[in-house]
Length: 330
Image (cartoon, rainbow, N blue to C red; front, side):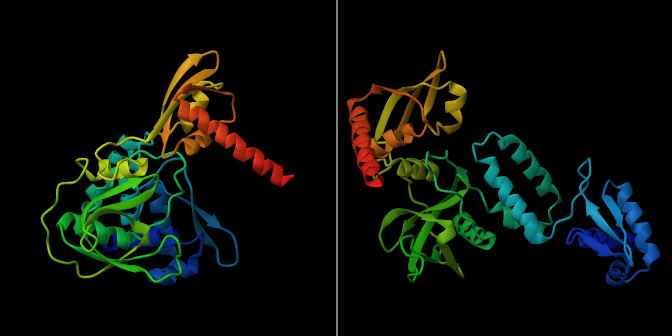
């Protein structure tokens, strides 16, 4: 890279790290004169960067938002974080999959080989978010890369697993054969065969602390349900332990006194049919009849139960519990 080009990139990198840079400080950091700083700032402006001059005893520069998106500069960690976010968006089911995939392809083309290799091991499958899913929990990029590497290389993964019930408790030690990464509602999960428990398990990646190096290679097992995504989706639905059916154990149908446009954003994996006159037929599921009734009641509208009878009985149970709770409140 030529000296002027390298200097421009260094200047751009500095401008992106803080809001205001005094001119003399920039010149000192880059080892150039203040006049050269002004000339390089003008070159960046020609490339589309909106750099404004700041007033003061020393004078300085500020990188502001512009009308168009100029070329951007990221360090290694930022590039990997953006790529992981785009991979997540590409399987999120949020309606931006195509745009996310195109952006990921564009970014991957300009990544150095050392970063492309790190990114390529992350191949998650996506499953639909469920009603009542908890908010996403941050995952360390390093942890995600280690888990993805073990999945890709078909190597035994050892990790400490934090307790969900008591985060302060000592983590348990696990040895697994990792078979797939899944992302749902911004949360990352690992589907694996637990070697000590001799059973399929689903682990939250944000609660994992991998140990290095990874273990021996293993021969992949036949996954119940056909794929890691189908297995995890079935488990989240409360299906039978063998996860051969991806469906909720309790499914019912109601008519809501709401137009379909107000129901669809909150229907989750249910199906909504516009009946006209501001009414919508909604078929949805949950792990129990009372939880399904509670989920449907959140629409805050008149509800007509179509069936089955278990759902109607669940609304009665929910009403009784609500009456007791209201009485205690009084």
